[in-house]
Length: 320
Image (cartoon, rainbow, N blue to C red; front, side, top):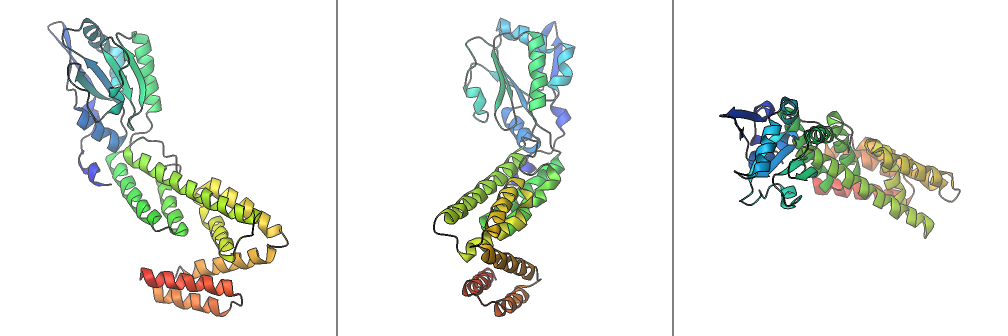
C-alpha cells in the first residue's frame, strides 16, 4: 500500500503545462508520460488533461494555439498534461482513453485521479467552453494531498485493512475513527488512491454492519434473538460513533427491544455485561484481561452470559 508512494517525490508545480512559441509554431513541451501522470494522480489526486492528436493535423494545430492563450495557463497548471500520438495505441494505464469521443482529431479528455472521465471532446473546442470545462474539472477533481499526508493516509489504510480482517468490530471502529484527521470519515474529499481506498473500506464496514443489523431484525421478527445477539447489538451501539448511520440505526433497534416486555430484562443484562467486558479488555496484558473476565464470569448466574465470557477468554488464548 505504501510502496507506490515512494515512486514520486516531485513537487506538483513542476508538472504544469508549458507552451512554447517557436518560429510561429505552437508546440507542447515538457509533457509528462502517462505513467508519471498516473503516479501523481495516485499519490496526490491531481487530475489529467489529455490530448490525442498527430503532427500535420490542422485541428490539432488550432487547438495547441488556443491552449497557448493566457486564459488557460492557470487552469492547465492544475493538471498533469499528457500528449498521445493518435497513430499509436492509447496508454493502458488510463482506461478512459480507450473510448473514443468521436472521429475528428484532436481528442481531448479531462480525467479525474481515480480514472473517471469528466469531459471528452472530438475536434476543435470553443475556447469559452474549454475554459469552462477546465474550471469544472478542477472543481470536481477533489482535494490534492501533500506527499506527507498521502503517505500517512496510506499507512492508516494499511492498518485499517489489517484490523478489518480480524472481524473485531471495536477494533475496526477504532481504526476507522483514526481516519478523522484526514477528513470526514468515509467521505475524504480526494481522489488520490489512499483516500479512495480509505473511503471504500469504510463503505465495506458500513455494509457489513447493516447486514448484521438486518440479521438481528430478522431474528426479532421471527424466532427471537439469542443472548449473544443482544451482546453484539449493545457493542455496536457503543462503538459505532464513527459511522453515524450505523449508530443511529443500532440505537433505534436497541430502544425498541429495551422497551419490549419480553426482551427488556435480557437487553439490560446484555448491555451491562458487554460494558463490563469492554472495560476488562482495556487491561494492559492478556493475563490481566483474562483475570478480569473470570471475575466477571463468577458473578454471572446465566449460562449464556458465562458462555459468552468463556468464548472471549478462548479467543484471547488463540490470539496470544
